[in-house]
Length: 504
Ligand SMILES: [Zn+2]
Image 1 (cartoon, rainbow, N blue to C red):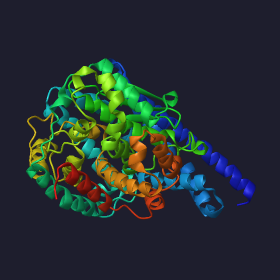
Image 2 (image 1 turned 45 degrees about the vertical axis):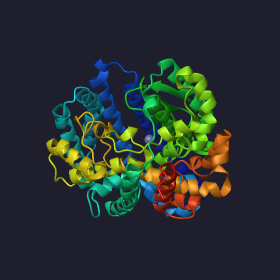
Image 3 (image 1 turned 180 degrees about the vertical axis):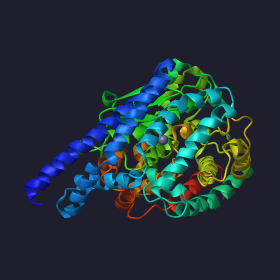
Image 4 (image 1 turned 120 degrees about the horizontal axis):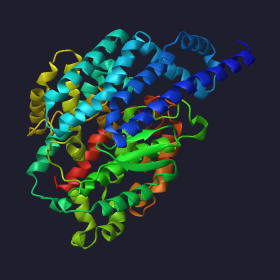
């Protein structure tokens, strides 16, 4: 192909992928509206629009036109710049994955999941698993069908894992979780046997909504979340949504008698948001203008929530400002008290409230269950029983209700099977990234003195700016000099909790 023809083709390819990106952004905006502020009566109409839009984007991804673009551009691979090469790689993945799935089924499925959120919310509020089970059963049936259309090597679940973390498989994750389990389970036993008792009762003291909102503002300012290109709203299940790097929104949920819940959800979502906001301008509003994988995304949210937010240095930094807001009710407490209470380790029922040490055990429960569900070997109606069994096995506790058990997470209602492992991978990536960061900057010193922009700059330069330009494995290799290595995370946990609970 002569250079003028190639140049034209690249131009047309970019316009074509911009159309996909525009539809995806519209869908993201629907999701935001639906979760935050939309009237309930419009659920069915919105679901219909979303189904049609999803089918439209899908058709563009698997069209003959896309196939022709890919074949032509791949033949010219060496003449393409990094961005176009990355776009070609992403479109090729999607084309190969989905061209065998009938578009009509994608439309039906998208309509189903757009409605399922409201069904799940009601079932959770009423502690009525049977109210959600038929919808869930349909979603699982679609997931299995899609995986069959797409084809897979090894376990059927691999196709879904690969969607969220390219290259991830059951075989790799089994090994990964075995390594975590080998350290976390005995460490948790030592923590429980420790003489050291941490007081966390004061975390249940009442904090008004007004004060909690001020705390959120303080946190957003500290971490450098740009509110000119973002906003904070309230909803049931905190999340981050974005329409490219220049419109990145987050939500939180305030609980009067658990102010740390919103405190940590804001830090968590700010971690996601900074990743999205800090991408380079050159990829803005293209299909590369998004985080590369959910594992890497969760590494950024967990970095801000845990590595920074649950460190003693951060509590020392934020203490004075926080006490000013919290007022006389909390004056009897020191920064150390907050640090210890925010790290109290004990088996619990709710994943999003779990401490750093037991968190990955909650993920293992979901991973094991999804593996069985996707193999087709489980009746959806048996889920509550299996949930209790797995909770007992991994955490030694059993839910007192389905609302606080199998119904607690929003993910399955959205069809996000294969997503949960991203959280555990994110924890591990985050520890590995922290290890690399320490070689360049004084992490504790920067956090203690409030120099969080130094940390943000490092993350932006090494990770955020690339969006989807690099693959996850390439990225982690470039940042840390090696592939994902769970040892950094287990070592981080051992060091932190041995000190905290004076275990020798
Ligand atoms: Zn997250």
